[in-house]
Length: 246
Picture (cartoon, rainbow, N blue to C red):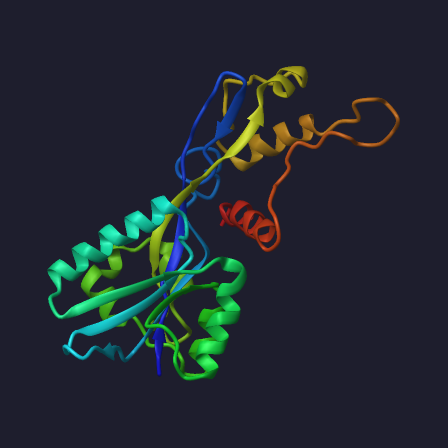
């Protein structure tokens, strides 16, 4: 029983509104002191694929997939993708099951312990190292060769390879994040709300000006930057922000 893993990635885009400004976090915008080579950041989705597949009575290969896309729109998209794949690959049938993140890991662990995991499943990035070290991952080198390593973002190459240079993960989807800024607070601090910083140095100057004691009691009560999140995702946001500086 061996697996391979695919990771979800998230890119960066710029959006601006009348009241709120949104800074381009990764690609070609705010942070260019060290050129923002990352382009997209690894979030915490993985796909685990086992080496064998189940065979139906009609000799069709059945591929069982567990994923964390339970809402109607994403389920519909999955059905369309599956239909296209089955049409292009006669003799292979895909069976999908949508599982919430809260129960996915426990269910996956139980399936692994029973020796009957799905053929593919979402999981967390940290599983790559631990599962590969105990021989439960199948490398994706052949997949990378077919894609062309030069077509992968540098950060994807870096986090997907082990010390021996073998691939145990690849992105399977891309999302978008941005940093929102308060234009009114920029104006109150004497900053031009229409000019986005182009370097880390410029941004740090702005953040310092935005960090103030608004009521004069000697305690800072307004900070230039706040990174929101819940659970493990707060660490993800911090790492993506600092990682953009190389």
